[in-house]
Length: 119
Image: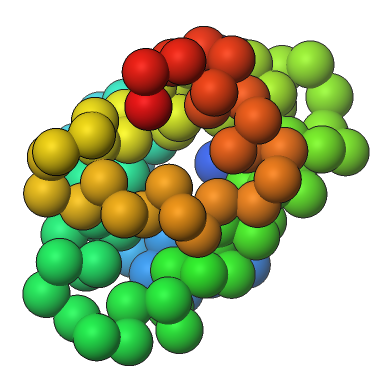
């Protein structure tokens, strides 16, 4: 099993939007969960939603809060997967969807500033 699988499974169990993406991911990867790939794809969905839907935070805000909680209270495995797959996949300054960083919790925002000081 890959690092971060429990994080992804827990997230899919809490949020319908994530559950749907999770089911597609598992099907596409022959029953396996690849946490890094899943989070890369998930950030793409969140950013796309933020660009086209005025109420995107209704669906995705709780997911960001979940990741914030796991980055704050989770184990080292969760923190590493969130930092290296989710945060590093966020848009860069001057890229569409960059404003999503304004909706990160304090722990995620601090981690992003440490791993990507230029934003």
